[in-house]
Length: 188
Image (cartoon, rainbow, N blue to C red; front, top):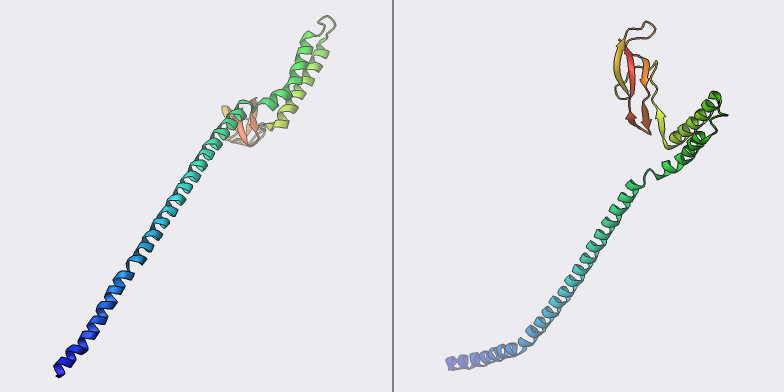
């Protein structure tokens, strides 16, 4: 009898478990479908985000390429017209030279010609100095191979060794760059 009771006792529990398992099986499909729908929506949202990011990237790359082209064009124009300011400032010097050449040759004296040439020379020097051109000091200076080009040597007791004795051709510096070294004679 005890065995029968146990069987009966076990049977209702087994039946309850089976009912619970069946209920779980019936309830399970709904959350799985909900999860699938959520994953599909999530995947779609990420696709849309990726497409938007891709479009932004393409626009940014196009903007960058346009900026590069614009910069290249500006640099070309800058290089092409860089000397325009200097040319404009030299135009009055050119005008003065033309006036001197068209002056009355009969009434012109050597002194008036030299005075005119000197005035034009000073005007030209002012334009160059304003732009940053400066002569390199040479005579009496210690020889500096960065700014002087020694073409001759001499022995002069008035100067120490390695000192520039004579300037054969003027050298010029544009702002902080030597554009032509001074050709000099150096004391040995």
